[in-house]
Amino acid sequence: MRKLNDCADYKNIREIINYMCSKWPENKAFTLKEKIKNKIKYTDITFKQYKDEINYVGTALKNLKVEDMRVAIIGANSYPWAVSFLAATTGDAIAVPLDKGLPDDEIEMSLIRSKANVIVFDSKYKDALANMMNKGKTFLKQFICVDDIDMEDFKTKAKTTAVTTFKEFLNKGKELFKKDKSFTKVKIDDDKTCEIVFTSGTTSQSKMVELSNRNVASNVAGLNKVETIYDNDTTICLLPYHHTFGSTGLLFMQSNGARAVFCDGLRYIQDNFLEYGVTTFIGVPLLIEAMDKKVWAKVEKMKKTKLIKFAMKVTNALRHIGIDLRQKVYKEIHENLGKLRFIVSGAAALDPKVAKDFDAWGFLLAQGYGLTETSPVISGESDKEHKIGSVGMPLPGIEARIDNPDADGIGEICVKGPNVMKGYYDNKEATDEVLVDGWFHTGDLGRIDKKGYIFITGRKKNVIVLKNGKNIFPEEQEAILNQKDYCIESLVFGKPDRDDDLLISVEIQYDKDYFKNKLNMTDEKEIYDYIWEDIKKVNTTVPKYKHIKKLYLTADEMIKTSTAKTKRNEEIKKILANEK
Image 1: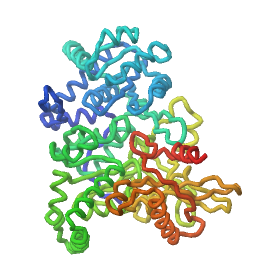
Image 2 (image 1 turned 120 degrees about the horizontal axis):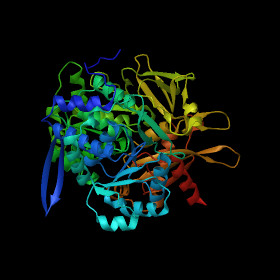
Image 3 (image 1 turned 135 degrees about the vertical axis):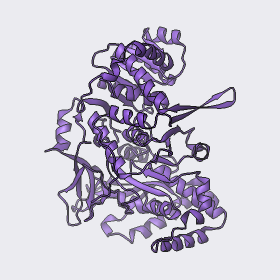
Image 4 (image 1 turned 90 degrees about the vertical axis):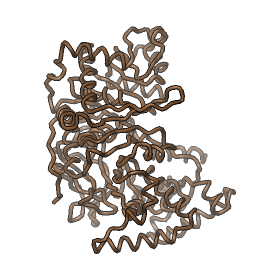
């Protein structure tokens, strides 16, 4: 049974906002940064101001008197994004977070499918939105731009007068709120849809997940009972807010009084860590693995690789007898990452070696597991329950079981709990496929050990089924290959073969700089031969039916979702198309 922190249960998002803003009214909720005439200006937003401005924007939205209001939000992580999202979900509107990386036609289709009638947007989308208005297919009635735009130009191009900046909209709400505070008294139906979230659509047309206030609030409460966040923590918002763990994760951090800051770009992460004194963040494995490689590259440059590896063995051994010297021994690694203490890894599987490294250096790294449909977190590790290779145990209130386990206990992971979605919007057939007798069928394969830890083995739809009935989980071999220093990423798949069977194949995205600087190799044929020799060695460690027989190389990044997941089907199609 899990050891739990003594935390409140929440029924809706407004309860979370009220709690954190009354408990830490003068704490910094955000630190905003802007460049004015080559000078950097920092602005702190207190929790009191945060709550007030959520109420102002909520009041202004309510004043629009739009029936069945659906507020689409698109753009980079920002303070206006967070305020708009919470204003919608703590009123009687529905928030519709949109992926900022979508092409224009997909943005338009998402707006049409979700029936969004209000949009909060970054100025970079102004021309696309004007074109959509001219087509007349969306339901948009009100435009709120996060930054400044030429209003008259947009009004002319979009043929609308219903446009304002976020600042103007907020100030209008502030004036209205002085006379009418009814927004704060809007009765929230805890089980009514409060947001419609598009799945990443890695393998098919994205579905629209309906989440309720109770779904999201219960997930925040569950996280708080397991993880420890302090009111002097600073979290850097790396996951995009349109991703469920981006927005739910922000609520989780801030419900403990933590401050949120924004990243200047992936190249500046380390600078931002030092600049703000970042103590915690939620990230994807690709980023965390890149951080690990960067640490080892610096260690190797200093010619201390053997020393650090030896030190890791010693400090790990000392921990078993209650002596923890990690902060002192790895002081330089910690100094390079500022005040970082706690990392949450989500969205995909993390290389176990990387998890062991961060643990050995004295950082708490917790892996989590979840899906958009589960608001999103199902399980997670903590400082109290930690098992390398697992994704932790289910959060309090969530049940997990394995459906149709095989001889090794591997089967589809199914979950039940207050975090499970209401269903897919306007898609009963798809809803009925995954929600059976209250259990959500995740589509992920895994096992659960005797203590309750969940281990993911792969996606059900990714399993390669050979003609002889043998099943191959590509993620297993990918995990081995991804440990190679030159391998940025690998993708194992079954290529249709002449005898109607599948040829086990792999595409490897290799690191050009590694081969050039470490091995003095630039010739592609030479690189291919080097990697192929490694694959032959890997083949000797697995049964013959799992042997990789075809290798594809690329120096280009694979096709990704906005949360850095590989779009497997699209990447495989690209590989096979290029071969013809």
